[in-house]
Structures are given as C-alpha cells and as structure tokens.
Length: 250
Length: 225
Image (cartoon, rainbow over all chains, first blue to last red; front, side):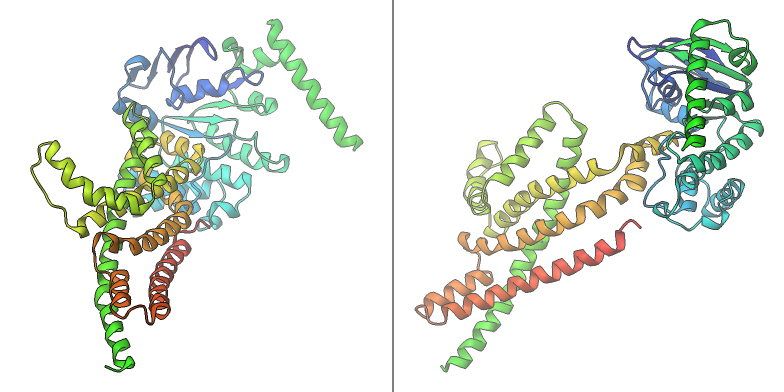
C-alpha cells in the first residue's frame, strides 16, 4: 500500500508502503495527524491530493468517484477510539448488518460469520445484548468483530484503547494481538508503547504531520539516533514511571 | 320539537360532519409529512439557494397564523394560478384547507425532523461510512431508526396542533363539526351555546387523545434500549 498525502495544516506529504500481512504501529504526540492519516485511508477524512493503492485497487484522491470511495471502504475496516457501535442494534445485529447490506449475504450466512467472529473476541454470551448494557472493553471487541466479519484486506485501529478504563485495556489488547498475529494487515495508532513494541513489524514515529522515522520496533524504541524520537519516548516513559509511582504511593 | 330530540338531531349532525374533520386531518398530515421530509432533506443538504429558500419557507410557515394561511390558500390560489398560465381555477374549500393546513404542518415538523437528524451522533455516520454503506443504506438502516425515537414526541405535538387548527376551516365555508355548531347556535339564537361548544371540545379532545395514544404506543416500540 502506498499513501501520499498533502495538506498544509495536518499532514504534510506522507509516503508509506505496507506489505501484506504486516503490522504497523503509528506513535507520536497528540495532534500530530496519526488519526487523520488513518481516516484518509478509508476516506473518512478527505485529502486534497495524493494516491493510494491497496492490492490491485489504485486510486487518486483528486478524482475519487462515489463508487471508488465505496470500493476503498469495502477493502478496509476501521476500529474507532469511541467504538462507534450502532446504538439501536444488538451485538449480533451490529456485526451482521453490514454483511447483509454491503456484502449482500443471506441472513443465515451473516449470522454464522458474526457468531464466529464474536466467539473469537469472547462475546458469544452477549450476542443479544444492546450496546447500552456493555462495558467499553466489550463494545470495542464488538467493533473489532464487526470489522473482521467483512473480511477486509486491511484493518485500521484508531487508538482502540484510549477511551477505556485502565482495567479494560488488557482484554482489548489481547484481541488486537490475536488479529495482528492472524496475518491480517494491521495499522494501529496507539499510545500503548509496550504493546506497539511487542506486536509491530514496523513502527512509524510521526510529529507535526510528518513521518519522522520508520523502523523495526527495536530500531525505534532502542536504537533510534533521531533526537525527536528519543525525546518523545523519554517523555512518554517518564510519564509512565510517574504513573506507576503514583499508584504505588497512592 | 322537544329539546331532547333537538339535541339528538344535533348530535347526529355532528357525527355526520366529523368525517370531514378527520379527512382533512389525515390528508393534511400526509401532505405535511411528505413535504416536511423533502424540506428537511433540502435544508440538511445545504444546497445553495434552495436550502435558504427552504429555511425561509419554514420560518414563514411557522410564523403565520393558520387562519391567515387558510385565507391565503382559499382566496389566493385562484388568483395566482392564472398569472402563471394555469388558467382559471376555482379551488374548493376542502382543497384549500388541506393545502394550507398541510403546508402549515410541514413547517412545524420539518423543525422536528431537522434536530432529530442532527441528534444522531457523528460516530454513527462514521461507522456506517467506514463499513462501506451507500448513503441510502446508511440513512435507512442506521440514521433513521435512531432519528425516529427523538422525533416522535415533537411529531405527536405537531399533530395535536394540526387537529386544533382544523377548528378554523369553517371560516372558509366548510361545514365540519365547528361549522355545524355555529349554524346550530345561530339557528337557535344562542340557546345551548355553551353546551354545544362543550360537545365540540370533547370531540376535539377525543381526537387528540387517540392521536397521543397512538404516538405513545409507537414511541414504546421504537425506543432504543
């Protein structure tokens, strides 16, 4: 995949390619454009110019038709920071609906697929619950199952654990790790540094709308010679240590 | 003629003319709903000029009393049609009532639908978009079902106002229940005036209660759990 993107304010010329099956994490300070970049890939944000290629689909953002947009979105799935689960549908309906509407599957097929995905994320006993009765961690796992059920070529995680209570983070990370290890091409925006380090094939450090550095987790987290990368990591680790101290002290 | 048989006859007359009110209510509610859907769509789409005109229309419809709209429709339409080359046309009071009440109603409910649409969180749009729904699929499967519970209470209110406003249609010569009451009062030189108005009040009340009940039932059915 190849994304080039030019926009004065948020993203200033991004060029990146990802191999099939690769797991790529995006780290960097808040407001850097990581989420925007992810949303450009499925055109939830509209880049002013640039090109994207996913598999055999090659598109130019400047001449994107409505059909192109749908094609692009149907090759990707997104997991949102705020879960974005459909409020008026039960868990299984949330997972089934796009399969029926978008993929034109029969109800039975969609049901079977949804059940399989919900089982994978550990929610088989919640399939008939409404979203208002689920915890954030459970909602996020529904979101992941909903995306996976469409069998996308690429899954986009947009800070999937940032809105969760600390005790719920782990259950979601576990599911993401399973997805990443299944061979699904995965792009992940996260502030969970240890997690990014553990699961990624490639880590992208972004700042002010630029890609500062791309490398293996080892290169970025341990051997980076880039001053800004090191400053950022130092700050993050200091904050984490501070939190740990607070927990012990408190 | 004893007073009792007179009253019985009057009640029969009321029951005979009640369908006129009901027909006008149902048809203007349908016309209003159709037009309000169109209006709201145009207003939300923000199409230059057309959206502003729709906004203006809604403000106008909501700011002019129903009685005046009724007169404008009844006396105005026959004057305007020849001007735009549609020939001479005498509009029946029924048509004038349905058109004016329908358009009046549409202004109100467009102002119920628009906020209901806006009340659906952006996250729901994003999720549907990201999954590859077409705009139509997104609207009918995701957005509309979440709009309806928000819109229903306001819509029920607007229906009640519409029912009330049909008490004005006798002003252009329609003999509905209100017209029947007025005729009967003037025939009997004002005897039983209060009683007759009280009966009318009960009839309007009954129509409103029924509508309210139906809307409530619907509210329960579409509530988001």
